[in-house]
Image (tube, rainbow over all chains, first blue to last red; front, side, top):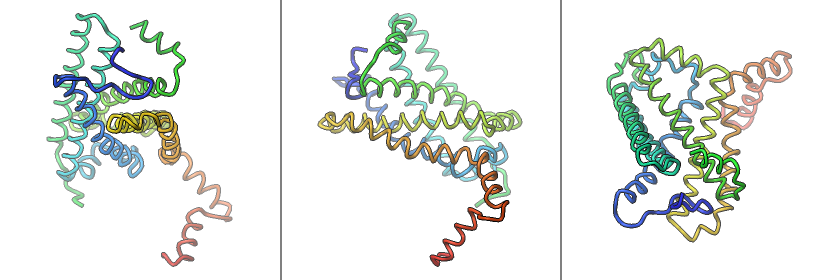
Length: 135
Length: 154
């Protein structure tokens, strides 16, 4: 936990121009994107609509009946995968000190991220639009 | 790892440490939900019946309580993330970090309590309408209607 100053702020910006700086910036950029995308997603799904009406049929006929919503939700998927898995990387590097354990855990995490990327991309790209409502 | 968790449990920190600890816990919680959520939405295409079964749980009382907890984790993480970003961009704001931490809690509850009520609406809207309208005394919708008419909106 040496590179955190928990008293006042988040992770200090690493010096230099290496991978750590890139990750530091990626966390902040994806964080701002998620502030808009994730919070608006929550508002849409829980306040404007209600979970009780969001059947698979409803997704095909209403929620994902326009390209713009699929693109928006795919952007949300990308931002959340980058932010959450790089965030977990920070947690793992803080908690796990053994080099071999780190490799095993980080490989599993990146594999999981890749699987979620594939599953999410497949469903958002291929779920068939059902006619019925084309508002 | 055990030492790390022990440290987390035993450390009596001040505002900044609590902010950091909540940020980490809420972040891991949202990460765990994201895994579930990508899989469930994949099922909407792959196995719609399984998806609808899971949706029935999301719409149930325990499901809604978990959604409120998810929303709380998301909102705290978002607000504290903005606090971190403000300090990163304007280091002179560091002297106000405690004020921003308390401010983020004010926003958290101001948005969170109405939000939780909206999520719980199936459990209070109809009973409330029955209670108020059933006796023929007042009806919430009627009051709103009357107000709108009186002010000329309707």
